[in-house]
Image 1 (tube, one colour):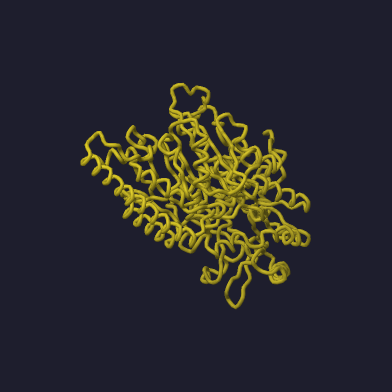
Image 2: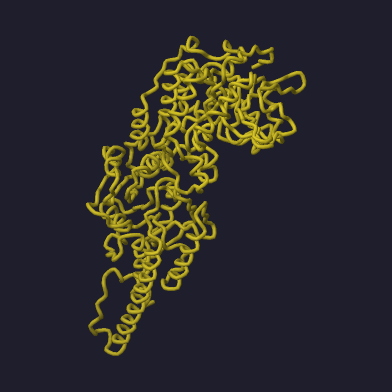
Length: 607
C-alpha cells in the first residue's frame, strides 16, 4: 500500500465513518470481559450491521467502515456485503487494543494481521486506519509515523478534545502528517470550540447523551463556517437497544454504553436528510483504490439478522468443527461417563453464552462421555423456551422443569437424581466459574473422595472483579463453617462441584436455595464423606442478575450453622453413649441405631 500521491479533495461532501464491532468488544468492558471469552457471547454485530446498511441504502449514503480484523475473520461474508453495497472497508486493528498498550513492533504486527484478514475477506488491503480503543494522544503520534511507513493513506484516530492538542491547533481539522519523505492524511472527528475548549459534536455517544437541539445547531454551524469536511462516526452496536446488559459495569460505564440507544436511528436520519456524506477514500480521490461492488466476485451468504441469531445459538453445543477434539461423538466406549447439571432460573439472556461455552468444554474433554442436564427452576422469563431450542433435541441433553421455584440447591439435587452416571458435576449457568476446570477437578474424585469443590479462596485460587463487600461476607461465612465442621476448607458455598452420586443422592435438605448448597457440604462433612478442594477463579457475573438476597442469606447462614453445630454435638453425644453402653454391657449388647448415611462418620469416630 503506497498512497502518498497528492489527493484531490471533494469539499462539497461530509464524511461518515462506522465502527464495525460488537458490544462486548468495547473499552467499557475491558476489565470484565477477557479476549479469550469473546467466543462465548452471542454475536450481534451481524444483525446490527445489516440494520445500518439498510439505513444507509435508504438515504443513498456511503460510509467508511472501520472493521476489526477479528470480525473480518469471523464473518468475511458480512464484510463482503458491506463492500458490495459500495462502502469502504478500513482497518480498526485485529483485537480491540489501545495503541498506548502496544509497542511499535506489536502495532506493526497488529496492522499486518488485520490487513491480511481484510484482504482475505474482500481481496483488497485497507487504505485507512482508526484506533480500536481510545484516541491517539500527543505521546502516541509515533503510530502515525508507522502508518505512513506501512503505506496507509489516512488515519482517523485523533480526537483533539478539550485542550489535548492546544499547541497544535491544526490537528482539529483534516491535515497531513509527515514523516521523512512519507505523509499520511489525518481525519479527526469534528469538534466545537467553546471558549478555547474543544467539545466533540460528531460521535454516536455524544448524539445519545446530549440533547439533539444542542448538537444539531453545532453541526449546522460547522457546515456553514468551515470548508473542511465534517467527520461523523458511530458504532453499529449503538443501533441495538436490546443488547445484553452487563450488570457489573460502573454507573458511568452503563450510561456511556446503554443510555438512549433507541435515539440513534432518528437522530442519524435527521442528519442524513440534511447533509451529504461519503467515504474518506472517495474524498481523497482514491475511490478506485477500494473495493466497490463491481470488484466483488466472491459469493454472498449473509443471513437475515434473525436467522443469524438462531443458527449461531442453536448449533453451538455438541457440534465441533471437523478435526476438532470431540468431533467423533459416537465413539463413547472408552470414555468416562460424566453428567453436568446446570440449575436455571430466569437465565434466558445467559443461555446462548452458556451454550457457546459448553461447545468448547466438550471439544476440550475428548476422554469423557459428557451428558448435560438443565433444570428450569420455575423461571418467569423465556428460559424454558430457550432451553428447548438450544438443548432439548440433543441426544445427550436432558431438560427438566420445576413447576415452582425451589431454589438452586433443590434444582441441583433434581439434576443429580436424574443423572445416570456416578460422576456428576454442578455448575452455575452464568459461568462465573469456568466450566473447563472440570477437566482438572474430575481426576481428584478418587475412590476415597466423595466431593470435589471449587475454591476461589484457596491459596492458589483467584477472585476477579467481585465487589469487596461480597468477598468479606463470603470469607466470614467460610470462617464460621470451619469452626463448626470437621474438614477445614477455604470455601463452603461454591456451586461448582464434582460429586460421587451415590454419596449425595439420598441427602435430605431443609434449604432449597443458596443455603442448601452449604447444607449439602455440611451434611456430607458430618456424615464422614471426604471433601477435596480445587483452586479456581471466581469472576463477577456478566449477564443477568444474581438471584441472591443478601440480608436473608446472611441470617440463613447463621441459622444453618446453628443446626449443623447441634447435629455435630448430638452425634458426638449419641456416639459416646453408644460406646459407653457397649463397654459396660459387653459386645452382645443391643447397639444404638444410627442412620445408614452416618456409617462413614461412625467408623471414623470409633477409630
